[in-house]
Image (cartoon, rainbow, N blue to C red; front, side, top):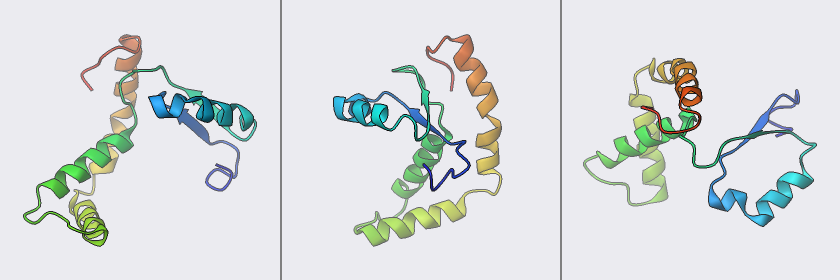
Length: 115
């Protein structure tokens, strides 16, 4: 965190997935709580992180390829090619959907949303 956010403004988002909420992970977060801000996220809440959308789109593109990747190098190449094939505004569109996603999440009080 100190490398990526040397300004001290970074936040760690805890998604409360079972492995992330283990005793070991919880203890580590408590021991290092002064090193960064910890953004708590309601457990079992809708995924609001656009990285998941990007990951899903890339994996879908790789799965659609004529020949599936057989080695780690093939997978890396397929992911890079799929990334380059994305339209230029793809990321911007995902970023612009964040405020409506958060608003829907708040309206649903952490429950299911259409996102």
